Length: 400
Image 1 (cartoon, helix red, strand yellow):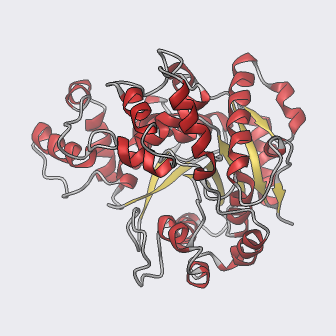
Image 2 (tube, rainbow, N blue to C red):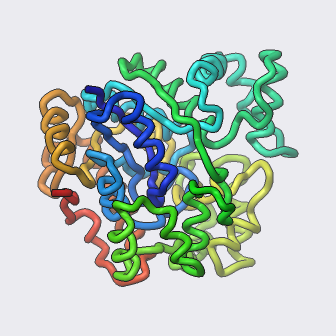
Image 3 (cartoon, rainbow, N blue to C red):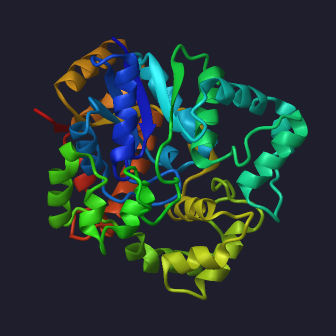
């Protein structure tokens, strides 16, 4: 029996994710136990989550995941390198994972390992340190990689899931992990696809984009076992969450502060804060702010991250430090048994209820306080009123 981990967002969980879960059990055995390390209320693309972490975790357990743990803020919102490194460190420290499985466009683990090894070379890392302003980052990586290694990788190899896969493999190597890497080839719609295209597997982006105008179609791409809960939570006003509800607050923050407030705000360089602040005087919306400040060099994801880092005071040292805790969001009976094993063999504090914070060291307590601060702001984005402290008073969902 294997324990397989998936690093995910499930924003929301859909039939493509269900396909990955089924493929894992098909390959490793029907009794394979699956642990999802899921982003909390903020996602790797620099956005707020579509639904809160407990709601998304509940859907995941209903769809076949045994235990859902949280990747906290700001690690959940970091660029691919820091996102992968912090997630892998948590998986190492819980002490029960045999395999890390991830989706990729290429679906070839040996090819991904080769690229990850090349990406770890210091000379090449210097080559890609300063992306060209004239082209997108993925195209820049494609061109540099071919030129530097004289290797004919597939055109557009550096797609979002392939990039994350490479970073996961690098992180496993850098941490001398005993966890094996495994990939499932992504099927269906493209990661960034926002329209339904006839495939039985649609992207999370298209489900989010079409939910309001075409709920019935969106429901077709939610796993059957999660569908009723998904619909009930929608009717109850649990989602969709909307960052535009914070637009006035964020734009006011930019207009009132001539600088980011700290010389060490993470990922703040090249006059980026001034660019965002100048844009704030010309718009009253969150999306407008991103559109006005965006360039090929400053991707929308990076701009969103920097906005949140500035607003919530996230420094580079915070993002680079080792994660001290994780939190249980949801589980079934098998997940409860896994949790007992983690508590016996793990080297990281696992929060299961509010009182668990007593077990945190000083660094862990700082990290938890930052995550709580971010979660309290997130509550303002929900369709219905939700108390600011609700996120850190809730207990995990348990599927009986």
